[in-house]
Structure formats: structure tokens, C-alpha cells
Image (tube, rainbow over all chains, first blue to last red; front, side):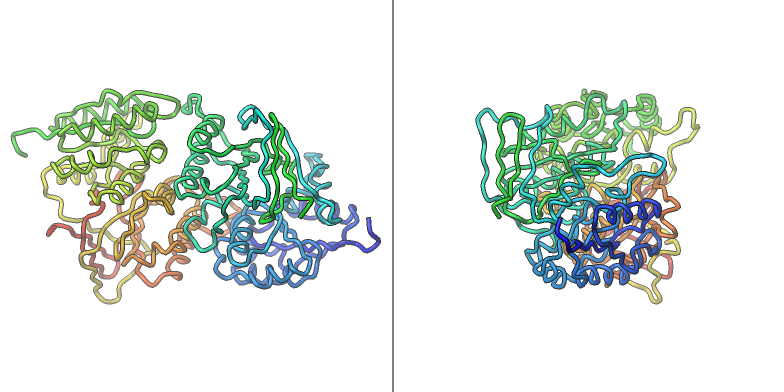
Length: 312
Length: 312
């Protein structure tokens, strides 16, 4: 590691921090990892279910953009960005990114990522949030995930070059090696992404690679959202769909065999592009960091997939 | 009542019937009310969570359209229409409506109503489904709702002229009498309606009156959907929003005062048109029947609102 400590700026653009112990553990963990941590003045503010009222959260985003930190990291997701999406300081954020601040987040943060890219073309990172990433532990005894922490360190050291993984049985199995070059990687939380269709905050990305994840959404709802993305023409404009982790949903006896594999099969039947599965990204401990808006290459062979952006 | 019995055709375009006792009670109740009931051959079919596979449900809709019945009534909602929305027999349905068959339903049926109107301009009715409308009872001892049954009878007798109700405290209170004339009434289930934004199945209705209801959606999700409707330009093109019943959601301590009244207040602040509340329509026993796609008048005075279509 370099002798100059990297700076992480923590701020709360969405839901109020519910678990202060997780917040504290997260700050301690980042410090142990050798980072300098700066905490936004409203990181722990609460207004109703939000981390401060709308104006407060907008100012927090503005301060994150002006922080000069190496990484601006959200404390948690929840709900709150969609509400102020027409008033976020996109120019300040884009300018901060130009000057070396990387914006990292997940879940509700997807809305900021899409809107920012649509409005300015600036690139961000899909990755952890503080509390559920670095702040796990307490009575559960869980420790922060190695792979997530390594990817985060790679980002700060400028060493991340890509990510590879093995699909599950629902994935696109290439008979011969398959290569996609120079495709814009984009995506995030399926519910949040879908909630921007039809608005000026949904970027028009052609020939891209779209990655998706979600939490606590029943497969029939996942299918309905995929159908909206498909029928609004978004999926047909991509070169590949990459499904991450869809976690924490509950099936019932009424589903009678309907479930996520059926949804993926249905999607594959509707599309002429590969649908990959099992990307290590989502509301789960093990997640990689993904460059939203960057040109990447994808190669697949059998069940194995590699996303590569080291040359950009 | 006329001496010739009116005919109700029951079919299942969406989810499989879960409660066969409710189905039987519903059929018995419609018979007691003096209607002739015809049951589609696949009304009780199940495939996974659906009332038959996609082809089966499409054929059921086709048979409903060819039934010559006075009313084609869904057995229940659930999920299933969105999945086949690109393959429904819209011309047959429109032609059946032209020849006097009224299509009535709720919930997932909203998708058919929007798509049909977008594709053909044909008008349908937002109203009950068999099981949760006419089939209530059993151990609960509940009986079908009077107002719902009276509105249904009015539809069959050609006597429905409109509906009036009193708003709750969150409603738009007119200081002076307010009148909207000849506006297209449309709407339905908020989740289902929102899931068609950006697709060819979302009608472009200008200067309309949009009614919305939902069930088991947290207010923050209701707000996110309203935000999508607003930012895609749909709300600003209407003359009024009419909120029906939003039922069966659960708040938590984390909401800290956030709830549906806050969402309605937020919406009202965003819009320059009246937002009415408490329309007796939704996933609740007492619901009126509403003509989707018909030109209506709306008058409001204080907390009272009247929707009127008797002259059309």
C-alpha cells in the first residue's frame, strides 16, 4: 500500500441508518484496513424513514462530491434517491469523479448511478454499502467478506482489472468460446432500475451488458420487471444480460414449481442474446465491484464467464 | 329485472384459483342473484402459479370474447396477463365489447385493460373478481358487499350513471365547486399499471382522470411508483388523480411517521392538479364499478366528489 492513506467519505443519501452498531463496526473496519474515514455531518441523521429530509440528503451528496476523498461510500441503501432525483447535483458529482473521487454504492444507489450516467455520462461503481458490507458482525459473529474487501482495495489501488465466475445450472452455457468486446457495463438493482423506465433518468445505452440483482422480490415480480425492461425495448438493445444474486424471497405452496429458474428460462426464450447467471453481486456478502458505465469485454466458455476492464 | 336472464362468463386469465370453496360460493351467489353463469373449461385449471400455461390462458380469453355473454368476469387476479400481453386477442375482445359483452375485473386485469385500450380504444370495467367479490364467506361469515352487487346489477341493467363519495382528510378539498367535463377515466392497480410504462401497452391518455389503488404495497413503494408515473410525464397530462383504497400494507417502527398521508402530501406538492382520495375502489369489499376509457365528468365540493357518466 502507498504511504499516503486513502480517504473514504461516508454519507447517507437514502434511508436512515437503522443499526448504529453496524455503522460503528464499519468505520472501525475501514480504519483497520488502513483507510482514513471521514463521516458526513448528516450520516446518522433521521427524518421519518430517511437519512434526513430531502434538502438534507441533497446537501450530503453535494458534500460527498466536494470532499476530495478517494471514495464516496454510502452508509446504506433503503429508499430516498428516487424522491430527489430531479434535484441531485449531477454536475458536482461528475466533476468530483473527473477529479478522482470514485462513487460506490448499491441498491437505492442504482437510481443515482443511472441518473448521473443519463445526465452526464459519468461513471460510478456498483459495490458495497458501509453497514451491510464492512459493518457486519455483532452477535452474528460474521466478518466482512474477503472478496468484497479485496475488490474494494483493488479499486483504491487502481488495480481492479475484472472479475470471473462460474454460472449455475440456469446460466448460458457456451458451446464454443463467446466474446463481446467494448460493451458498456451498466445495471444494478432491478426494482430501482425498472422504476426509472420512461423517465429522463434512464440512460439510453446501446449494445451494452446489463447486470441485475434484487432482494426480497418474489420471482413473479422479478419476471414482471424483466418483462417491462424487455417490452420497453431495453433488453433487445443489449449484447448480454448478466444476472447477479436474487436473494431473500419466499416461495409458497401456491407457486407449485414456479420459481426463479422458470423466470430465467422464460427470459431466455424471449431473447436472442445470452443470459448469464450467478454473477457474485447483490444483497449478499460476497460481491465484486463493477464499473457502471465503463466499456468492458466479456468472454464465456462453458459455465465460466469473465468480465474484463483492465485495458480501459 | 328483465325476464331474459343475463349471462356471466367466468374465466381465469391470471393466477390459478386458490380457494375453490370461494369459487363455488361465487357461482352460487351469482345464480341466486338471477344470473345465468357459464364457467370456462379452464377456469379451475392450474399450471405452476397460473390458471393454465400461457397458451391455455390466451385461449380462455379468446373464449370469453366469443362467449356472447353479457359480462365476462375474471375469477381472480394474481399474475399472468403481463406475461402474455403481446399475444392477447385484442381484436376479438374489442369486437365482443362492440357487440355488448362487458369485460369486468381488477388487479392483474388492469394490464389487459390498459393494453386493450392502447391497441383498440375499447372500453372495459374496473370492478370485482368472482372469488373475492361474490365468493366471500365460509368460516369468515362475510357476505358479498351490497354496494358492489348493486353496481354490478346496474351495469347489467344499463342503469349505472356514476358514483359519489366523501374524501378523507388527505383529500383535495375544494373551496369552490370544481368541475371537470368530458375527461377519459382510466387507471386501476398502481403496480400493474406502472409495470407497463415505456411499453406499447401503456395508452397515451391526455386530459384524463386517473384512478389508482393497490394492496400490500408499502407507502414508500407507492411513492416510488407515483414518482415514476410523474417523471415519465403521465400525471401532468391528466386533469385529476383519484386515489382509491391502498390496503393491507404494514408500517414498521423504522418508518417513524412516514406513511400514506405523507406520500399523498408529497404527491400533491409535486402536481398542479387535484388529488382526490378515498374512492371506494380497490382490494376491499366495498367497491364501485368504473368505466375504463369512458368520458366522464367530475365535480367536487368540499370533501364530496361525484364521477358522472350517465350522459354517455
